[in-house]
Image 1 (tube, rainbow, N blue to C red):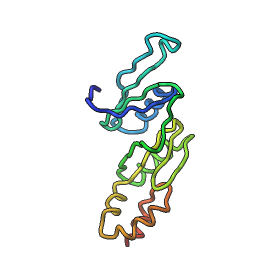
Image 2 (cartoon, helix red, strand yellow):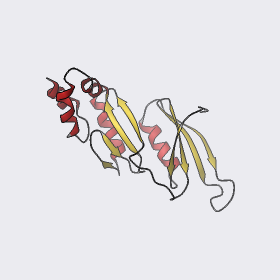
Image 3 (cartoon, rainbow, N blue to C red):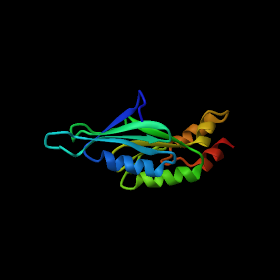
Image 4 (cartoon, helix red, strand yellow):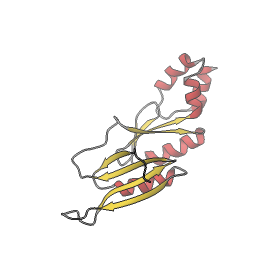
Amino acid sequence: MSDKVKTCFWFDHQGLEAAEFYVSIIPGSSLGRVSHYADGPDKGKVLTVEFSLAGTSYMALNGGPHFTLSEAASISVTTEDQAETDRLWAALLQGGVESQCGWLKDRFGLSWQIVPQRAIELLNGPDAAKVWPVLMNMVKIEVAELEAAAA
């Protein structure tokens, strides 16, 4: 994974654990290079982990407790259908916290948007004005409810 541009997420110490979890739940994903601290009190511990989620490159940095993740940055996943939405939502929510409109924060503190492709179509279609208010009251996105609003 030698992409010129990739997003780096700062973790306290659990970057490898997070990356391994993420690649296990998103098809077409893989772990890449893992680097270690060369000296100092953390010598030998994991410093960075490069990983790819469905072809998009990321890096996890174990930088200590100085900075924390926030909702200001999130990974957005467009799912094929409600079943994939439900599967990813359940996996990411283990130990995490739900938000609204398809957002959640996983157990590592990383924010995610889990959005079914059909929801995107409805939110940009001719009945969008009827669909948006329904979406704004959802936690996990339920396509059937959005389709009912559009009908």
